Structures are given as C-alpha cells and as structure tokens.
Length: 287
Image (cartoon, rainbow, N blue to C red):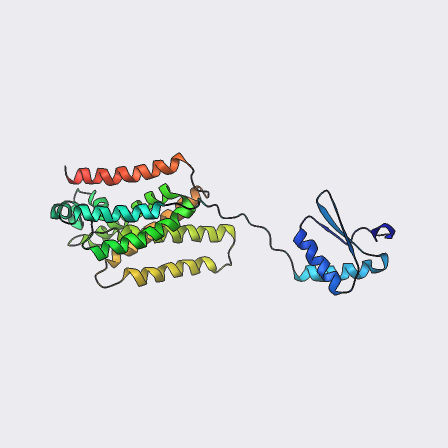
C-alpha cells in the first residue's frame, strides 16, 4: 500500500502501545492502513487518497489523549525479615526483664531523671513494657510497620531510624512534661516508624508523581491512624505524637539525602549502631 503513496507515513513511533491506539482509530473510521517496522520505529501508512483524512482523525485523537510523561519508579529495597526479627526481640526482651523491677527503676524514662543527667533513659525505656498485651501489640504493629519502612529504605536504616524516632519522642515528651512523668514501652518507636512510613511516602508522592492532593491524603490517613491506635485509654498520647512527628522528619530526611535505599554493608552499619546505642544505654543504666 505504501509503495504508491506520494506522502510519508501518517504516524511514526517507537511505542507499540501508541501504534496500536492509532491503528484502532483508523480501523474505527474505516481507513485502511499498513504498519511497517524499521530500526525499532513503527510507521503507519495509508493510501494517498486517505492520507489527509487519516491525519485529521489522528490529530483529533492525539489532542484528546496526550500521553502522560513517564516517571521514574520509586526505588525499593525489597522484601526483608526485619519486622519478624523485631517482633521476636521485643517479646524476648519483655520475657527477660518483666520479672525484675530493677530494670524499670533503672531504665524507665522518668522525666526529671532523663533531663537531670540520665539521658540513656530515653533509650532504655523503649525496651520495657508493663504487661503482655502492651508488648504483644507493639511487637505486632511495630513489626508490620518496620517491614513497610524497610521495604522502602532498607532494614538496617529502618531499624536505626525507628530507634532514633523513639528516643527523640521520649526526649521531647520529657521536655513537654518537665517532671512527674514516666514513659516505658516501644510504642514511641512504633509510632515513630509510622511517621517514617508517612514521611517517605510524602516524599515519594511529590517526586515520583501522584495527584496533587494525594500527599496530604497520606499524611491525613497517618494522623487518623495515630489517633485511632495511639489515644486508647491508658496510652501515652504525647509520647505517641512526638514519636510520630520525629519519624516523619527522619523519613523525609533520609530519602531527601539518598532517594535510593543504601545497599549492602551500610545497612549493617546502621543496624549495628542502633544495637550499640541500645546496649550502651543499658550499660550506663547499670553502671
């Protein structure tokens, strides 16, 4: 068909999907055409008498169906078992410490002591829980959230930032209360992890393309979840809120510095630093 045409091809593209769309338009309009491929380029040809009509129909179609610009995919670390490890470690720590009140005396985040020269309490308090329902909830919820965070930024970085968010939340809570307040439990770090997931999601929505209002929908959903799970009777609402806010800041910061997850040994370095902080805090507590 194209051999007798006095015109060039009606359209040319390297996108097979776009070529199929153009072919469907011409078929729907009853305009015969042929396709040929050369060096990866797909070209549509028509008879000379159909050329102008084909151009008109495809111009109208293209005007109404402007292809969206391609966007880079969100970089991911991938699957990891860090959430399961976290859950088991939290449960094991509770089993080891729950029967000894000295751990609570030396490790709870008592505001006046934390601010009065015993800053390690902001760390040690994360490993203490009042009862099994408390620790079980933190293990389950925290493991799920840590898995979600690790999927985006890697297991070592996610764990380290969760601990950091929990510590920051305990310090901020002590500053807000100033005195006569004691905090224990991993829930500050757990809600910090929720904040990390929120912060990284907000960054990704902005960079990798989501509708304009979607980033704020993500934050709104996160705040709603914080309100639903973090304000139950007996919950330390201030600690949960400060942990969450700290996590949002840390999540935004880590993906702004390095949008792709850190690889290999650096993940182990972050995980090791978090373990050193936890172990070192307890060493200071028992000094």
